[in-house]
Image (tube, rainbow, N blue to C red; front, side, top):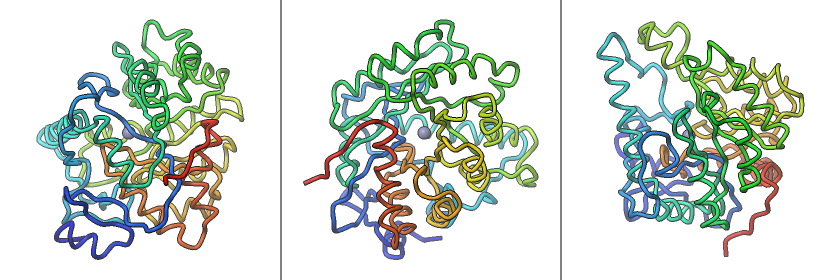
Length: 350
Ligand SMILES: [Zn+2]
C-alpha cells in the first residue's frame, strides 16, 4: 500500500512514471511482447467512439485507490475492500461500472493505444470486442486490424442470443479473425447454455481459440457483500466455464481470461484437467503468476493487460518479477505461446 504513485514506483521494480504521470515499464533491454487482451473505444457493446479520434487521457478507474493498492493480490487490492451492501451498494457498483466504461471509450483510441504499446515494448495486441445480442462489435475489430495489421490482431465476438449468429464465426474467420471473445454473466446464460456451446463448437471447427472474461474477486461467504450483490459479482465465476468445457472436445482451445482473477488456483486445476486450455494473466500478481507457472508450467500462460481498463505496465511488471530467474517462462508468457495460438511471428523493436 502506498501514499502516492511516486512512492509506488520508488518501491516497485520495473515501473516508472512518464511525463504524463502514467505508469510505464522501466527495462533497459528490448523485449518481445504480444498483449493478448486489449479493447478499443468502439469494441464494447452499447457506447462507443471512433478510435481514430483524439483520445482523452486515461484515468483507469478500474484500479483501486492508490492507498488501497496491494500489488501482491489479484486485481491489486485486497477483496476485503469491497463493501457492497443494500441498494446503495448496487448503485455505487453501477456508477463505478459506468465510470470505467466512459474512461475506456474516451481513452481507448488508436493514438493512446500505440503510445502505451510503444512505451511498454509491446509489438502486437489482440483486440477483444464484446458483443451483445443486438450489437455485434466484431466488424469494428476486423476493420481496425485491417488498418493496422502490424500492430493489431482481431478477435470476433458473437452473442449466443444474436438472432443472426449462425455461420458468423466462419465468416469472421475468413475475414481475418484469429479468435473469439465473450463476456457473458450467468444471469444471461442459466436458462439455456445450448446456443453458447453451439458457438464454441463452431469455434472449434473453425480452429479459433476462445477467450472468456472469467472470474470473480468475491468469496461465496464475504460478509461485506450483500446476497444480491454477490450474485452480481460472482456472475462470471470460474466454475461456470470450467463446467461447460466438459461438453467440448479435449483439443478445444479455451482461454481463461484474467486467470479467474481471485480464482486463479481453480483455473490452475482446470488447466490440469483440460490439456488444451490456457490462462491469460491480466491483473494477476507476481505471486499468483509464479503459482500458475509452478502448477501448470509456462506453456499455456498468456500475457494480457485489459488495456484501456488497466495500464499495460502493471501486469507486465508482475510478469518480469515472476520470471526474473526463468527466461524460458518469460518468453513463453510474453510472446511465444501467443505466437503459436495466433499463427503469427513478431519482430523485436529496434
Ligand atoms: Zn477485458
